[in-house]
Image 1 (spheres, rainbow, N blue to C red):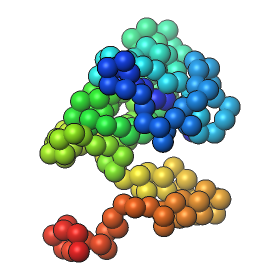
Image 2: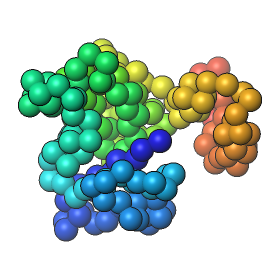
Image 3: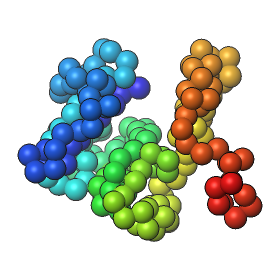
Length: 177
């Protein structure tokens, strides 16, 4: 699964967090042959991640659509987004992708904000604009599609080690028990 990453104004805001750097090493403008390695890792100042260096990987083969950066029928991609500042970078990226004809998944447990009150507002806005807001587990199982593949076992292992609260750790009102 190709990974595309951006850093927001590295000079002023700092690099991508160290935990993700091993997955971004060796990225270039050509396709990555190493699973989990980024195809492209771009420093940007635009809030949207839909910058030319990323968009060029998704341009449709038809000249008219490619000139606009739109996905021609059959050339739309399914794109999952995770990131910080849900109400800014994630929202603007998702809206740009939707405007260019792509199917957008926003992974709700993979986004955040310095102001946590912004997250639900942004996710609701994205839902109304046509993005699919879902969880990482739901999206992963949808992508895998079948319990017989080896990746399902690995997902179960990762889930059991997760530090995220489980649904049964909350009472009926969503409070931690």
